[in-house]
Image (cartoon, rainbow, N blue to C red; front, side, top):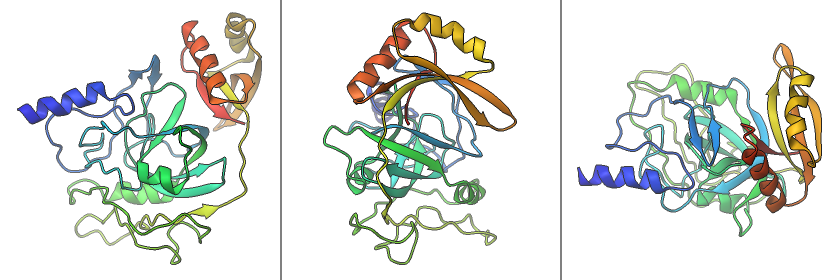
Length: 288
């Protein structure tokens, strides 16, 4: 009972990750979870078929509970990350837009609970991608839909999977993630017993390098069905540099308010807090 209380207390105190409290978990399960509020923002987890987002990433804090939101053991040396909205577990490619370095990781927890952050990575991933000393960097997060679908098919009554540590990888220009040029293999995703229909590529820690593409930061308020709906909120943002931009996707066009550009995390965060103080929901920081 004491251990359960301590885990729950850690979950409340954690400033970085929104995790499940309670007793040690059972088998790994596909997890979405209910909407929740963190740092003055509402987060709406769902099952994404496509996800490709830019924004700010940080590093998972050291006071993270022992278990992640999808019932895995948290390991700071794993190729893993936390997302406020993605289905758990899933496989994503994280790219540091400042240096062009990318690596595939497994998203298995909720967080970070910091406004304007789209991902928190383990210290190991931060070292591989050369995060700055301040721990906040511009990133792109792209869902690997094929590998995630295979991973989802392995869940259920199969063995509990844990994010085992990866070792012996150095950040350098290598082949594509999962290629034979990588070092020690970290296989986080064995198939369920008796399932031989598909296999998931192991996470290796291999780094791919592309041209850096940092950009200015914008605070974005998405999800307006019509341009004039966006204009109503723009009137509340008087004095801020705003414009309406279309967002194409699916079978309809939505509209967003972009505020900026900003050329530092500090000024983008200040603008986001100003939007929140006006009672305007769901602002996010993006990279353009």
